[in-house]
Image (cartoon, rainbow, N blue to C red; front, side):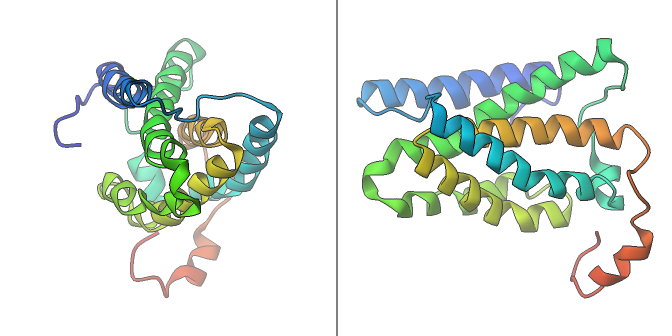
Amino acid sequence: MEFVPGDLGRRALVDAIVLIGGPLALGLSHGNRIGWRVNRIAIRNAVLLSMFVLPFYLIGSTLPTIRAFYPMWETSAAPSEFLPHAVKLFVLALAAETYYRGLLCVGVKEIGFKAVLISPVVYMFHHASKPPIEFLLSGPTDILFGAVDYKSNSILPSVIAHGAGLVLLDWLVLHDPLFDPVPYLRYFEWLPMPV
């Protein structure tokens, strides 16, 4: 992560080459499929997973640490600027999910359900520079996304949930919060980190 470009467009290109091209080439060269499938089960699970994570993005977008961090790349809510930004975010999500859930989970499905436990630590390191609450939730999220993709035999659920979530989060942070989180923050004072 220290060597990836800071610009979103260049980052999307590098991630596409390394995290999409690499796993696809590795999978093809070894006769493995890495979850690039679209079928009824994958679509149903994509909808269900997206609905499950939606509240996390909605509530997260109101938290001070999240609002201070996002959007990671400069953009505005103007459609002419935000739509290309959203497409690039989806490329990042597709790249990340191709690597984490495709190569490291669905791609090694023959080892059984424990495949969903291969990437959480690496995925958490990937989120180490993010706000503490996001870092804390990244491990369980990795396991959840991996389990859904494993059962779907497709990375479509995590690509849709992750990609739509990134786009939604940036959109929400560019606007006033959906609600004032301050009255509710006292319920999280026990956490050993800022929210």
